[in-house]
Image (cartoon, rainbow, N blue to C red):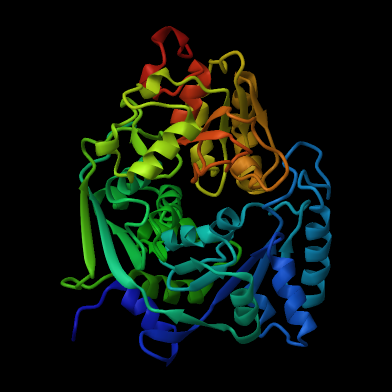
Length: 472
């Protein structure tokens, strides 16, 4: 029998029919909607007199434009945004699908709550009108982002027409240094191979360093497959996956669990399976990373400098545009860049393990004068868990705003934002022009680096914090 990749197994197990060329009709196991796009797909479906083929497989959450400030209600900071919330609420009720509403104790960012509730499962196909749906591939699923029209088709038929991507395996080998996180692995990959390095590929992440990551770290790694331009990113399930999923609300139970667990552990690439491309990265000499420009590929170690054009990997035009937008010039040490704001949150880095690591950096310290610092948990479950551990008090004592869950200032859609030309250190996934506000200058990094930079008032790694500032 020919050795097969994990992706080939996922594809074949969901193949309904071969279509033209390398396109096929694929069965969809889960559809997740959010209030910014969900009401559009549901309304269009209703207007065409079509129904959802299986409402039990469809979920929706309020996350993208909800207000994350304490005491929030249905109002949003997005002008006209309240209609998205009220229309989504009415549409999901009419369609009889599960909605995680603003005041629901399980509400949160779609790519945070789907894993923590066991909605995404190994071997499943999962789609959502959101580009970072590939986050959920960390549990061994084939998960990818779609548009509202595709969402309507998936809702009505339980299938989608999909062009089969090529396969790539990215192996992170070696032992991760203590200060290096999954976020740093993602940024290092994109910096080395470019923001279009994964274009057209389904990317399997593997290797000793990936196996050593906990599930929440794997979710971060797969999340940024989007910034690599990959169709999806995923990781073969293992015993860590089973331990994470066991007893989750939507996970199988009893005899069904035992059968599913055996099947899930068989979901891996066969020895000798051939990929269209393989990349191997030795992690042993990696350090914490940070972006300097306006693309995730514009990145260097935190201890580095803004690169020369010849070393940037960018075209001359994009290099000069990035420097002008960010107010930088080549050779400037990243350590010299003062920040006016710090943000910890987003579907990339807002889980309880992220908050624990950032809180450990902040313990006994204060944010530098003049720095606005915000922490937004990825779900209400994460928020409760963090508060039970006292993490919220550490953040507040350090000078951070402690918020309700949601996407918040990961992106600017006409609502709350950081200031024009304000330099922000952020745990989010994108540093595009005006991503966090008109003319805002965003540098993305790990939660630890964000916390350390907030304390020092400049871009810095944890190792830059003075010993006398450490908690006793």
